[in-house]
Length: 434
Length: 184
Image (cartoon, rainbow over all chains, first blue to last red; front, top):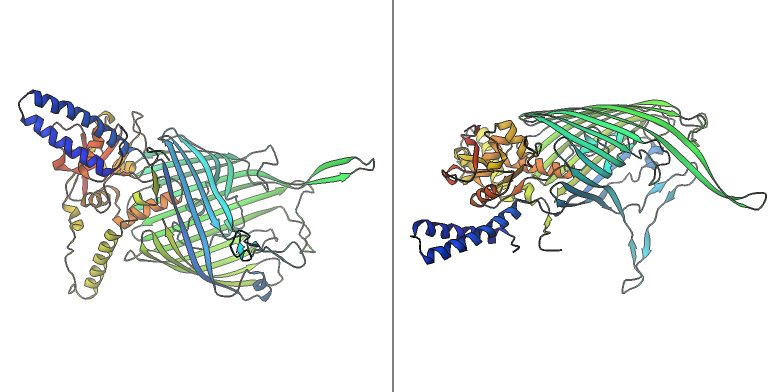
């Protein structure tokens, strides 16, 4: 018999309890024997019910979403033009849906998707010249009116993996997962992060945010201390859904953590991999034969190492990360920089990134924070090459699941434009976990 | 979807739905804050039974086959925060919680996990958003929880001391007394 639900279990428990009491107090008799038999049957039913109670739910749906208001303005006129908008604008941001399945106590599947309005309205500069804007509006031919437009959105697969949990020391995850690196990329979601604005090492993909491959992870517990590890082998950084080289990317992360009133987590992360971009050409040979050819246009090896520290003490929270990335190209396999006449190709380089956030939560509602970030990419090919950003913000917690996050940032940096650039960000998001 | 494949929505087990509890606690904090500002003139003793949580005496119980003799606060926290999932004898641990609005849950979270109800809810939201772990299974009442612990291998829970009678088919491995975890 399959029974489920607390009311039924409680009712059965109540019946059994009453029956047991009667059996204990009554003299043995035929009636009592019948009652004992019924009790045994009820016991089995209750046992089955309570056993089901202890099983994890097999399929769960949860997630988070946020909406916001923001204004980004650049003091450098030419950079202002490059921004999506310099005007005050409402934003429909993340609509992240988690689908989790647990067919067995040791197996789990997790798909996290982001339902997005992108790529509608995305501006792109393809080198010098006029920018292109993506327009996903189409006529809704299925509408009764037959002539109204709809904007097609997109689904971002944030991660999708299968997980096998053997014991505390060995767990295996296979599929597409977030790179186990530092604090921000692991925390990942707006309800969990303190600040809104993503640090530059993630914006500029100094490490790949996600990888497709296999991840081993586990922990050794010595309460209140805990040592955790992550090892990854993956396709690494790739422009397609496949690996363009046989060299696999490897990564690791080790964290020493202490739970308690004083919470500490000190971690170190590593990533090493190669990257290759290819161009395939279909052509006709002088002999009028059809020919397919492949040419490697960009190839490099990269190695990154990072360190991070989290401290929690009463209302105080400190989060800090720093990383170094080294990039070395194969001879002649560099990306061209069409907008830098005196520097035609991306150089080999060492990049440096770091940030720190200090927050204090009081009265349980309010959490003001300050955020400082600094970077030097030595690349001369990105929108932000070198500089700093100083932020102040506040999070207001209406409930544990609903918060208003606000951040003001002043950024000063160098890039491919001739002058040093200054940009001010005022961003806010109303965030809900569900 | 078949009968044995329940669909669960949202952070029900993460206690985020326990708005009533949060509102009550925050009302208390505001009263406290006002009291501090106005020399205590506005302080009113909270009327909710929730705030009697420090007076609750709980027994932390396990399935006897688990073989645990006693648990200290740190190990108990590791089990209920899902950091420790398998016991030394390779039995998978199944921590079981009572509902967040219950006096027992508030007392347990404070004593064993150093988490007040808001922080407890936030902790599990964070864990789930990171894709790491889901919170312990929630059982609707202490009587049923004791029954679950009796029959489910690896089960660990907590109930009022009066529910654990001599001869009970569970092993008491710790007590929660006066806001502290005490070995038996």
